[in-house]
Amino acid sequence: MIMPLAALGRFLRKMMSLHKDELPAAGKRVLVVGLGNHGMGDTRHSVGMAVLNHLANKLSVGDRWTKDRPCCGDVAFAPLGDLQLILMKPRRFMNVNGLSVVGAAETYKLGVEDIYLVHDDLDKPLGKVALKLGGSARGHNGVRSCIHCLRSDHIVRVRVGIGRPAKGESVERYVLSRFTSTEREVLPQIFEQSTKLLLEHIQERHRTEPNPTVCGEPTNIPLKSDGA
Image (cartoon, rainbow, N blue to C red; front, side):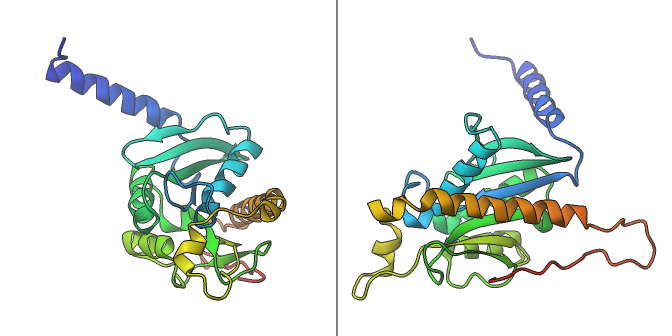
C-alpha cells in the first residue's frame, strides 16, 4: 500500500519533531567526528574512528550507533554534564569526510566552534597525541575536506600519531595498512589518552566560556595546548 503524500508529509514532520526533541537547546551540543574511510576502520588512516568507538564505550553509548542518512554517517548521542556530545563516524571515504561534517553542522545547527575532529597524524610517532586549535590541514585529506566544506580552518583537532612508513614504503600503502600485533598492544592506552585529552578540553572550554551579556568582556578565551 502506498501512503498518500499528505499523510507521508505529516509522518515525516512528526519523526523530525521527535528527533529534535531529543536534542538540548542550541549552544549546548558538541560534535565530535572520527575521520577515516568507511569500511576500513581497522587501518592506521581510520584511527580517528577507532578513538570514537573507544569514546562511545567510555560514555556507555557504544551500542547506540545509528545511521544518520542526512549526514551520511553513524551517530551516537552522549551526555557530558550539561552538554550533549554528538559522536559521528562518516560513511564516506576520507577525502570527502567534510560532506558528512557540514551535513551534521546543518542538521544539528552547529557552528565551527562546536566541532572537534579526531584524526591520524603522520608527523607524530605512535603514542603521541596532541591538540591543534585550528590551522592548516598539514597535508591531511580528511581535514582538508572539512576545512573546505565548513569554509573555515578554526576547527579543534585531536591529532593521533601513527608515525611514518619505513624507508622505501609508500605513504598511501602505509596509512591504509593495519597496525602490527605489537602496535595493537598499545592502542588501548592511546585511545584512552586521546579521549581524556578531548573530554578535558571540551569541559574546560565550556567552563571558561564567558557570559556574552557582560559588556566589555571578550567573546572567546583562547586555550593553551602543549604539543600542538
